Image (spheres, rainbow, N blue to C red):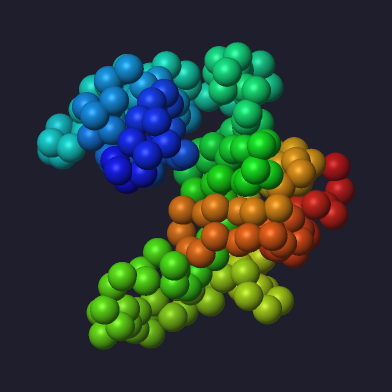
Length: 211
């Protein structure tokens, strides 16, 4: 990653924790790029401050923290906002931050939607070490975009969005309004070219739900 960033000019300016769970390596990145601005969802700065038993988690200051009550008002920087749209899905249990990189029409998300199996991500792992077992296979069936993806649709509808389905639906509709073609998920392969169509299939119930 450091080599790729150096190839791109080496000027890393933003470090983003895409939700309240994906944040462990913020301190490592901040050490390498001390001038970068750290962005994350509400609750994460406090969570990190309370962590005492993990030396990887530091006490870095956040530049921008997304909050539900001001989610439609927050801005990052003029430079960042020229290239990105973003939505804070506070109705998601993990407090998701979803980004749309406008120049390349790319949607970047963590746990909003999985795309298992993670063939691309584990391509360098020896074949004999990739066996997930029965439980892994069952989990993957609820986290795939392949076929009709009924398991994934049901998991998102009945589990992830049940706490605040109207708020979840509102965020899904906001994201759907972006002109993306590619989806880069945290879990699973990137979806290139037909990302919008896959998104519409997975979130069909949310897009059609009554306002």
